[in-house]
Image (cartoon, rainbow over all chains, first blue to last red; front, side):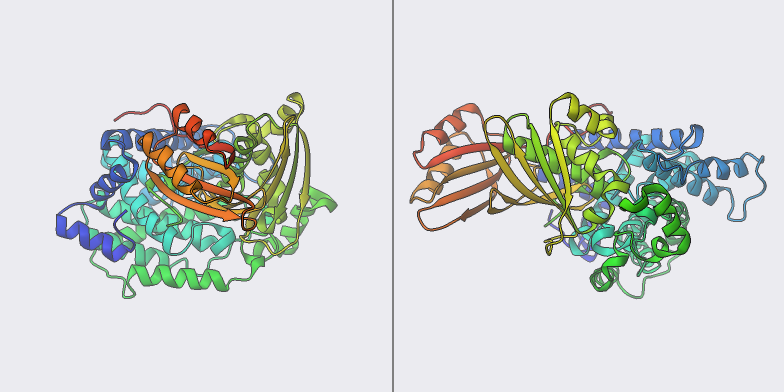
Length: 296
Length: 230
């Protein structure tokens, strides 16, 4: 890859008059030695798995093996068909949230998903992309573009900071996914590469410091709900960027701040199941009930 | 760069619930199996850091064992990996270690087969991506994403040139290379990540070199979706 920062990526795209997705596709093809068509085919296969995970999550029983979670996507979907009351966030945001919950619940029940960028944050991109596809009537091919754009943004974040909760807390997982989804949506809706960069900065700022504190060490509480609300955050960040709001701190510096914050985070708050929500009385009771003396 | 391409960010397709603790763990298991180069009959798995603290909740133990059985990250047999291990005569021991780990998600896998043993330490660095840090006491650094040659040899002048020449004859480009040795003129290990898989002709040429003791091939291909549209 010939870019290492968001600023470089955006500048090269603007110079070349290309979208981030087109630029990323060309770079990827160079790196792998495979044709752009082959690269697109693999991404399209991933998108199919994402759509299938959404479908499974809103139509089947997603009770997890621990029994802690499942069914929340369907509860939210009931608001959309009118049987479950009215939405506060509006139907588009609510649908994105429901789809993100759906994929995360499929993940928690050991179903098939695509890590985007991780399994703990696997609901956000499908939540945003699949709901936007339905809303705007975009073809699958367009959604593949969205994934290449998201991948380019995630590639920079991953190499300059981290994408795992164990290294950098939830900001590294859910935060990165929100930034990637926001940037992808900006491109899909016709925004410029610079606006994508601002969307990344704006989105990532809003999750700085978010810790990874899974109850009983399971990717369930609070991960699933953070995916659902993360999808809504991504829509909001995309709107800010498309409206012309700029990230006063450039995206790359926000990524740097995330890295420094993650490095300073105590180990109890980095996917050890020892701090935060995991350490609450209820969190500990749940862990005890599931694993007894033999924790984890 | 720790993360090489777009599919290290979007992907892999996998069975939940955690890309570091499930998919990455499965890949480390699969690499260990490839390094042993025969079906393992006993595995001693030691978890460190976050792996040690949360492996049961994440099914990290199931995932490593699934990998040891050769399963891909999206193989749903991972959920019953212990039962499958028993059926295949693989004995498992799981432990938790407390030494200062090189990464929060670290595992050491000691494998025995009927023909030999192998010890590997690897890290799951996020999004299902892995980094192998040690093999049989040698420091290494590879991910399994590219075709990888793990060559054990004696520390003798000309060995690296011989390896490079053999690859050149096969038209194989070297992407990365690490060399480590236990002492001057002692045992050494060279690890080469390549752009193309080495064919039998190349391997035969490598084995002819007197200093080369053993060659193992690691490659995690076959995990990508097989269907899809252009």
